[in-house]
Amino acid sequence: MEIAPRIGAPGARFGRTRASVRAARGAPDSAFRRAADATLTDMYVTAPGGHEDGEGCGDGFFEFLEYDDADVLHAVEVASPAPVTLDGIVLLGRPAAEVVAELRGLGHEVEAAREAEGWALPALGVVLGGTAQDADGFESVRLRATPVGDDAFEFFEPAGGSRPAGTGPAEVVAHRGIGPVRLGSARADMRRLLGGGIGSVPEYGGAAQDNFFEAGVVLTYDADETVVRIAFTRPASVGHGGVPLLGRPMGDVRADALARRMRIVEREAELFFPDGGFSVLTARDAPDLPTTAVVSAPARRGDDPASGEGAEGTGLLW
Image (tube, rainbow, N blue to C red; front, side):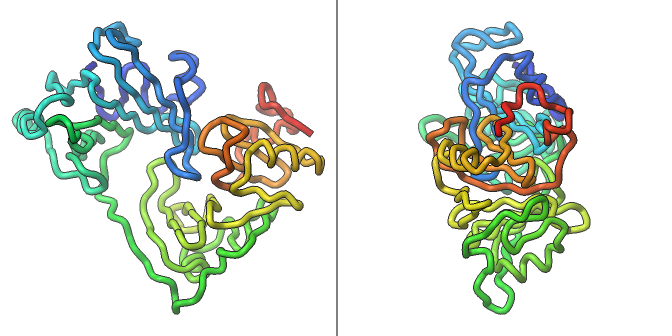
């Protein structure tokens, strides 16, 4: 299974939409969020002895396909014992030191990964995951559509030691934000409002991101450092029109919203409220699971099936 850096893996080419990948490969064996407000990751289990491109592969393995906030494939992770190669070098199931030495022998730049245990080939967008406890070798190979950047985390403290404003109950403000947080707000203002946290560069979309852990708020910014996506997670408390949205079974949120005649578009592991311009997420597509995040972002083309665009198969409810 020879990987193609910056292009993708067999059957999973970067730049393709989730719908097109699923049409070609079939439905994933599982789809889940790696964080409370993250986009869904599709997991495929390849049976022992085969792969979708027809190559023999020995033992079965797992592939994780990650999509950005426009549902476009941007990263692929393949787990051991997959027979992954780069320029003919077997990357998994061998002593890590030998793999690194052989890659460098072919002229590849290989350096210690900054965000996780393992090694990175920065220019190729490849990260070799941490070594397994029961074997001398890397656990996974992760491919990105872009180079692996030197994006250090930034820890910042609350301004003036004030208590974060986002820790109390918050109400969705239709198409504008959640609680005291508004789309289009400046990053500096949000840090003064919400307190301390960790800044980073997200892979899935946006130019920058702040995670305010105490407030339970994750904000994504554009290049001008203004808010383009708001996510409230636990321990925050969020409601809309008398319906509590966070930390409850998705089925209960759905039932309460319909009882109040709110419009809902049912999506995979998500309830979208077109009249409010926000979504409620769960970790996987199961109505009995608790909701994990409430997300507000600018409307996208076809977000509201009532407009006549993108209505097919949405499950619009009244």
